[in-house]
Amino acid sequence: MFYDFLTSVEGQSLFTEEGFLSSHSAIKPRFPRMSLERIKHPAPPDVKVSERIQTWITEHQQTFRIQARGR
Image 1 (cartoon, rainbow, N blue to C red):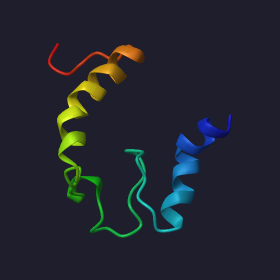
Image 2 (cartoon, rainbow, N blue to C red):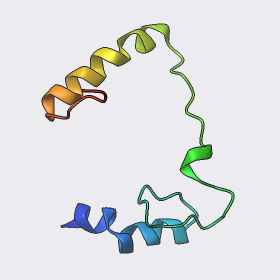
Image 3 (cartoon, rainbow, N blue to C red):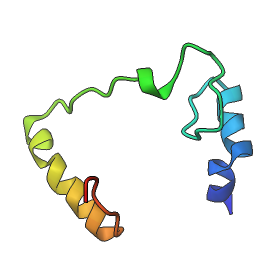
Image 4 (cartoon, one colour):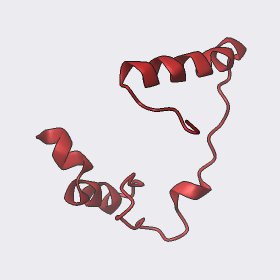
């Protein structure tokens, strides 16, 4: 129930009130210039990590039965 609350509109609104970005599409950011589209995700610092990312993504998709994009 706690996780359901955290991911709900009400729960995510609490995050934005504290200045955090919400992952919920119905919640507007507290500061208008902040949006998920503008966040740049840096590449992993370790070459071995970046080489294994696709393997981990595939394992995650298989474990949780998530269909890969483009299928």
